Length: 460
Image (cartoon, rainbow, N blue to C red; front, side, top):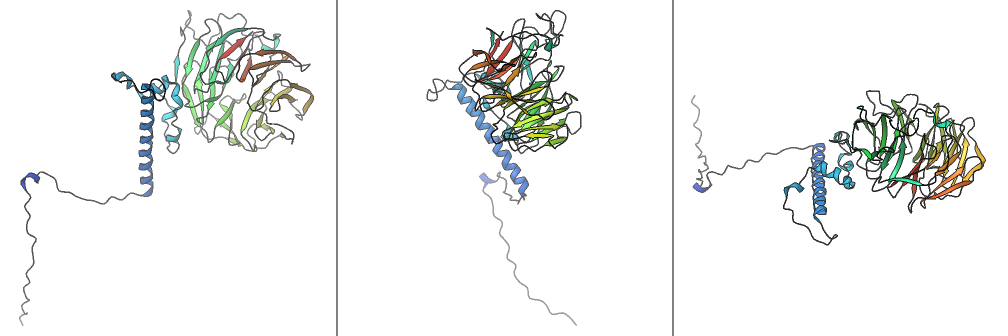
């Protein structure tokens, strides 16, 4: 049986459109849909925002450089291509101008800021002496640098012998080279660390670059060949004193206020943070940027760390107005001192031999506690007369234990007799806060001091 024939339908066809000759060379458009997940979109948005921020900062710096006669004084013509210098060199030459990469890199796991192009610069007149030795070797000094500091009788300084230019925005810490004291390390609010020669030509020897914000603290190891620094950029860095190289960098969670080597093992250090924690690191480990212990009993920002009892323990003070004593790597205080009438303690110093600890108190006094045993306050030994309220002002004790020295918020430096607690001398150093004071480890009456003014004053 034959199948019936199906009806034929006319299928319309799309007529071919001719493209005019002037438009034949233009490629035809093609649209494709691209899918972006939320993580990729956020990453691209963050990168675009970071690039925009950098361009704005660079443009602001260029305009500031060209500006003349104040903010309304117009601009100079830029006819030379030399002004378009490299970004990193421009930052170093202008003391970093408060430029901070922290916001750019807070959410990225890049290590670019831990490896700057230039970590230090030698600025002395000669890097080697006639025997080929660097500044690390104490030669040509007016004293024997091998003597024990405690065997020399100390006296109160009488006059200013030299002023170092210091740092433009103020000095936060002064540290002598261990034992000999022929070099002086200073940390400033300009983000730089500087090494000074106290003898010979009294010149600036080396500038250490690596922090992008103010440097809070520096401390040498026992030999002086390395030192630690910490700053507002939330970085702790280990430096080579001779070459100026950064050996290791650790980024911490909060602003570090103070850092100390562990004298029992100088591959370890502790750092006091503004988030109430004390973190303990071991630089010899593969995961050196992970703390091996965290001491977290304080309720305020950590102000000071002091090694006590022949390096068996350490003491901490904080904004919570308490003093706590710790065994190494044990997160339980051996003892803590807390009293409703007690004030915040920004600084502390150990008496030579370790029998006492002097505490700078915000009630304009220096109190003394036992350096071992029950750590009780000695109510008969209180030093008063200076003004420190509202400022984290340092204090120091002469190596022979006879003199206590402290800075002052009105530009003075006070010297007390340790036995009688009486003021024996009051020096007018400047008009601004003197927050750093340090006895020389070898000379009989040399004391260095500095503060917000930026200059470093050497008295003897």
